[in-house]
Amino acid sequence: MSTEGPPPPAAPRGRPGCLLVPARTKTAIALLYDEESENAYDVRLKLTKEVLTIQKQDVICVGGSHQGRNHRTVTLRRQAVGGLGLSIKGGSEHNVPVVISKIFKDQAADQTGMLFVGDAVLQVNGINVENATHEEVVHLLRNAGDEVTITVEYLREAPAFLKLPLESPGPSSDHSSGASSPLFDSGLHLNGNSSNTAPSSPSSPIAKDPRYEKRWLDTLSVPLSMARISRYKAGAEKLRWNAFEVLALDGVSSGILQFYTAQDGADWLRAVSANIRELTLQNMKMANKCCSPSNQVVHMGWVNEKLQGADSSQTFRPKFLALKGPSFYVFSTPPVSTFDWVRAERTYHLCEVLFKVHKFWLAEDCWLQANLYLGLQDFEFEDQRPYCFSVVAGHGKSHVFNVELGSELAVWEKSFQRATFMEVQRTGSRTYMCSWQGEMLCFTVDFALGFTCFESKTKNVLWRFKFSQLKGSSDDGKTRVKLLFQNLDTKQIETKELEFQDLTAVLHCIHSFIAAKVASVDPGFMDSQSLARKYMFSS
Image 1 (cartoon, rainbow, N blue to C red):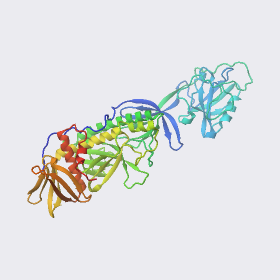
Image 2 (cartoon, helix red, strand yellow):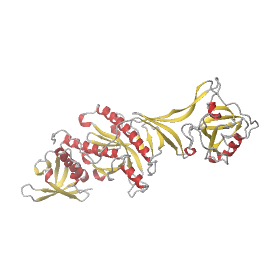
Image 3 (cartoon, rainbow, N blue to C red):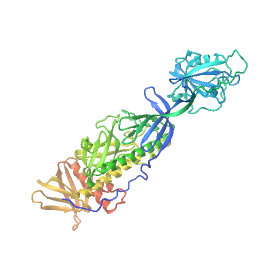
């Protein structure tokens, strides 16, 4: 039985006031965290509509004869005022190389044009210092005489605790010549022990010397089409408030990107998510060209699913969900061709599932902002994932999902409503086998007519009620349900008790049809699903 209704209504307006921001380009300095060394390194991020590029600084030869490899050997002439014109940090006692941390403008090191902040010192006057302590290198440099030859190599991954500036700084007020520390600048811009007190000529490059520049170079490109974002460490439930990871469909990972403030992290999370969403919409449009009007993709994207039976660790696993035509799909990886849709892990009929938001909804990132403002680290909730929803299917099968942003939760809620309403109006009705007073009957939920119970063989109608006549329901949570209808003539409540093989699916179907009916009457109704739940007291 099929009834053709009016065109599908617009999805009801949900609670959020804003969804994902438009696609954008963006550039910023961040930190790339290395889980093995537990160090973070400065990187520059470049976001375009299709790719997230990670850049690292390096020193490259831009002219003259290159010395080969990445090593540079430079001769410095100690000046009477200013000394070598540089400072260093690091040392083997901290398992990091000694690096140049400051270069002073117009002094010896600066005049060579071949030394840069971030250069690791490999040799001093031919003596290897790669495994030397900070104090040993300071001693060598201060007592090397008026002419000092050092070999360096730019350290692309300088640990953030060295606090190296991203650009060469100007003059410093650090004139201390006291005891050195590997985590503080040891100034070598003072006069060291010299056998010649006369001013020496400045260190300056000659025409044939190679010329070097420090530049940001692309090291990794992460395609954003069908990519996913995670703010959680794999196997752990601790939320990184100022960090996230981008994982491409082909397995390429950005690594853990840390930001200097939580606000910067939130801004970048929204920006990358918006670009992924825009690419997903493009993929949906391409897929829909190959699908019939009744089998269009309404929404799809990455979520995290809570593993069934998981203990207090609250383990989640990434899943890709899709709302397409009459069905709700759960995939382990995104469908990239028309043949991939048959390999879904789970497929449910949209009219027979119930979408429920778990957390109380807050405006875009207000959850983050509120907790930052209050200084909260741990939450008095069942888990630390603020944007959770569940999908309850037939026979009580339930899936719990989490998304990274409140805007994504809003999109899923709206999309489920829209896809369900469209499917209800496409199909018009659904019929289930049931038993009543010992007889096998058929129970039909019809978008136009309401509820009808009739004999399966003779098609004789036993009773029929409109949706508006349903005043409540109760069930045993297993197979039996009582539907309470108001008789239009007597105004009395009539109870109809039915038994179904899959009671959950039937109750969800009733819920979906009532919600769609409400939305068709008032498309702007704030929450038609809540009104539908008013009459349905099942789980």
